[in-house]
Length: 172
Length: 290
Image (cartoon, rainbow over all chains, first blue to last red; front, side, top):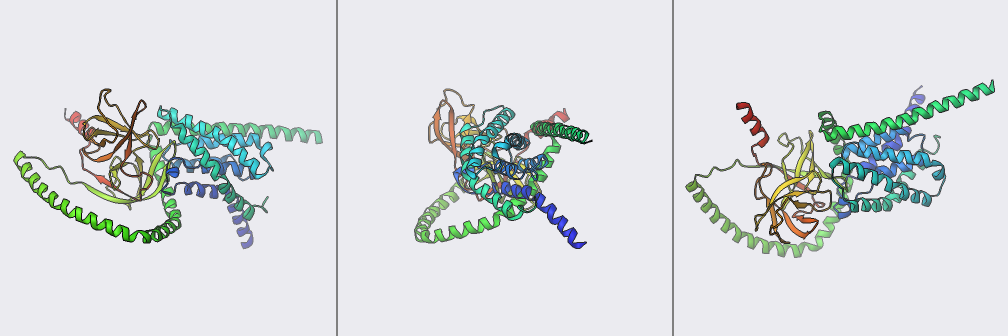
């Protein structure tokens, strides 16, 4: 009986692991880093996590999880509430529609994949926030944020891959 | 029988697909509603956001501990090499400060005498707290800091935030232990300023770019690169004369100002309450009396 309870709790915990890891990584992106790049063009960690988990474990990373993660990102950020959630939903829509092209591909192909999808998300957010403030946001910072995100993807993807391989390989 | 089961299966799949699509549309609508509510400064969104910010900030505060320890250790080792050089600089600075201190005392006495002669009303003394930076955000969409206020009840929305050299922003949200600060380059930041030499008035406006711009200045105004910018005191939120920054460029796009403090190197900030009367409440009071 006790073993059953522990097993169920463990399984439930593993179900929430992608959300938990993604939320912690998003919070990490708010650490003070004392650098010009970090202060102006932080990588889009949340979008990278959504992309990674939707490709590898769409069964654990469904619409509800994306919604909760978007709310966490918006709560932490001082950008307009809801804008982070909206772009995560855009990423969700794109990945779920393109999953057949991304599933089972090598890491390099997935890196190219996020390089192609990320500009769409960033432009959507740029547009939403610009409309919200009735003023154009600086495009150059969006571009630099895109570059830092691409540069950080191997690290973020690697961390997520480590979690996937260490804890979530046997529970399919 | 098998045919009926297959039909049932496909029917079920179609319904599931429709529900899924509906859920995505609903999620998008919720996101837009959140944006609209936050635009209208809805109390519920503000309170929810403050409560969530409190949880997020305390988590970041815990996450930052190992990183801070590593950075401090590295900085300590680096500082050891510079100690001798710094010692000489400090001696020189000390010598200059002793002279400046003597001059200041003389000026203080002179100021007191002149104030008495003019029957000058001394403004209330400012109070401040020093707060540690626990999180920062910098992107094309927001520029803010989260600081630990340690449950200080005097911290409230709108208070001036200073770095070690000048104004860096204002308090936007307060929680029980943390406060969110909009930096001067955030799009929500608008500070009435004036050039120290030419006395040209304007508004320092953040655009979410790395540096803020001075706006609403007359076309024929004489502003030069290198001019010091201080707060003008107009509007009653910021007191007059606080150092803000220096003009670094002037072109068709506007006048760009570099704040005196490095906005990305802030470890501690001062949240200052100048005890200025709130102009909005004064107007309301006057309306009530009338």
